[in-house]
Image 1: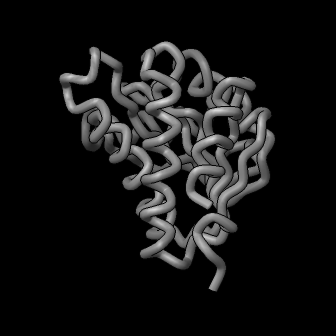
Image 2 (image 1 turned 90 degrees about the vertical axis):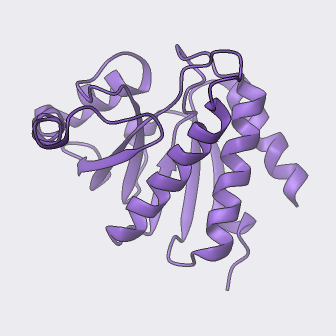
Length: 178
């Protein structure tokens, strides 16, 4: 069996171009698209993603922070998109850290439930939601490693960083776990 660390890759790039079973979208609770990675995924994936999001919202209402739902990947190279709602940073006194960890855990669990072997994550909540990037990198890496120690069906997790700062922070966290 591979070690958890060897199943994680870090790259700087565009998550909409990554060939994996599922990409994770840092969505807003309405699931209707937005800015940042959310807008990029909706634009690149096409209208099929939004149509499925509308059906999900009609069935369950908005997606709560920390939770995740799955749709088609539409025109993306990924078969699926997992939409998870990251926490807005309010100084750390509103369970932001726990909610961010839930985003990663719930996304991974949904990937397993849908027989996905490869998954790509963006840097959830580090953009307009202002989660401190260093703290977010620590939570992301530790949560994914903990999950991979218990779950062997996920073969590869890729942290796809849009900017050099997030990439550097994720790599630093990975180095500290070796």
